[in-house]
Image 1 (cartoon, rainbow, N blue to C red):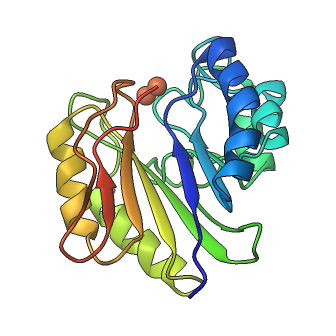
Image 2 (tube, protein in one colour; image 1 turned 120 degrees about the vertical axis):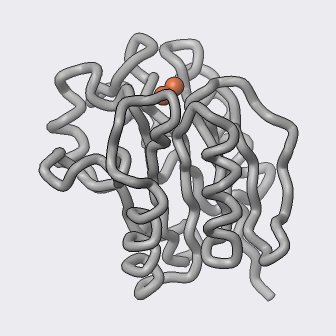
Length: 202
Ligand SMILES: [Fe+2]
Ligand SMILES: [Fe+2]
């Protein structure tokens, strides 16, 4: 059976983070035969927000989809960017009037369709729409195109991330957390085969 390897990178922070991506991701892609790369870019530009140059730098060095979170619109360029490029996501549970989209179906280097969904937690963060309800709706939609789905749950509280992992177990390929910038060591394959980690780190 053919296999697909996916690399998920947590919050890429400022120029040191971008430099690390530029140096490491192309090599890692080749060495580990990685077919698809997702990176959280909310801190790409000067540590907060996104700009055309900083997102392009990641796309030029092997990143397929950029997810984000509460800092996506910290720089004014953010709004235009998420509208212009469907591979740059903002949280799906922002209100519908917010520019951009919270999910995308992209194609891996070997031609597989891969869904990516970006959600924002509500515990200890500003109130947004319910990530659980929105996940339900979005996954139903993405599943029409592909069963391979990755979820970036950008959230503060470990409990909320863990809950989302269990909620989506068996319905998506993986749920990973971002935002706190400190990696957790709780990576697991949940009972219904969804891969899970509370936080990828910085
Ligand atoms: Fe962050
Ligand atoms: Fe964040």
